[in-house]
Amino acid sequence: MKYHPIDKNLFIDNRRRFVSKMHAKSLAVFNSNDIITTSADSTRPFKQHTDILWLSGVDQEESILVLFPDCHDAKHREILFLKETNEHISIWEGEKLTKEAAFATSGIKTVYWLNQFDSIFNQLMSEAENVYINTNEHWRANIEAQTREDRWIASCKGKYVAHTYLRSNPILHELRAVKNDIEIELMKHACSLTNKGFRRILEFIKPGVMEYEIEAELWHEFIRNRSQGFAYTPIIGSGRNACVLHYIENNQACQDGDVILMDFGAEYANYASDMTRCVPVNGRFSPRQKDVYNAVLRVKNGAINLLRPGKTLKEYHVEVGHLMEKELVDLKLITMDDIKNQNPDWPAYKKYFMHGTSHYIGLDTHDYGTWNGPIPVGSAFTVEPGIYILEENLGIRLEDNYILTKDGHVNMMGDIPIEVEEIESLMNA
Image (cartoon, rainbow, N blue to C red):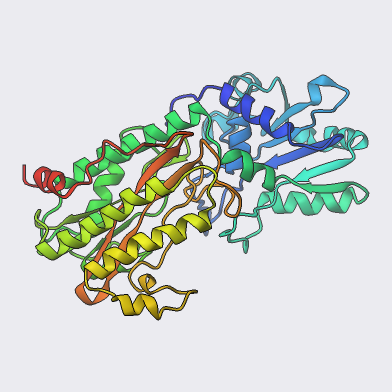
């Protein structure tokens, strides 16, 4: 891995929090992700399942974590099963975790090789009454492709039909939403790499540059700072492309007079950052562009003051909508009559601001957390309002990442330029 070792106390604490929520006489199982094949003998770069990563720190394929806090044998209350390394694997693929390295990473003392899983698990199941299985229940999940976790769940249910099966995911949604201090420092570091990338491209952007060239500059800056690269597929959309919410082709030339919308973030140690900035291709905003930009900035600044622990996201998004209404009226994009006669299920402001304002962020860019219950203290969020005016080929979105505290918030991207004057100054230095 490119990143520096993570303090294993993070994973020890995460496991402690998880098992405190388990029913008695229960065990929980977490599998790593597959290595995804493409064609011929090619594969995609391995990306670990964030649940086993959050609980153990093990960033390696073909790994299994078992938690059984009530097991009579103390050494089997936490177990890691790993792919056994050998000289052939070492030469062709590189070193895998040894048992000693696995303990140093996770704090788990009992480590077995994967070929021992079936026999040991059978012993554990003779004592357990319930099994926590880890299904993907994120509200935006794409579950078309079968995962290693899916295959294991089907196999387990087929073999152990008399056990009661429980869900790990609701516990994870509750716990992973609240960030440990170690996690916050990792996220801040990811944000600092995003800052480096943004400042680099401010010196690079000019009329005629290709969107993919901007993407390449960012990639270079992230990799050279121990990141694996982008936390998600970047959006580099100039002019009309900025009005396409998930534009990822990044293959057009940036024209003089246009504004570029750039939605990107570095990952670090698997933790995501997620930033959006908009800059003028020629280094100067037009008066109209500046007016729209500052309107979005005012909504963003107002929104973070509305995003508070104890509130629900539904309540919050309604309140942000009222902020946006005022700005769109002032920009003469909608009228008070439009608001008066609007469909309550699709308010008038949605014509120009059609997406949500905030989402949880952490190991996943759209991280775990409750969408219907009260927002917890210590959760991490994006704030990202936007105005998209297709008829003017102008899209503006501004986004930062925040930790919500008991008394307010911490902007993890507070050092990244966002004011019009600062951006213009840096681009014309």
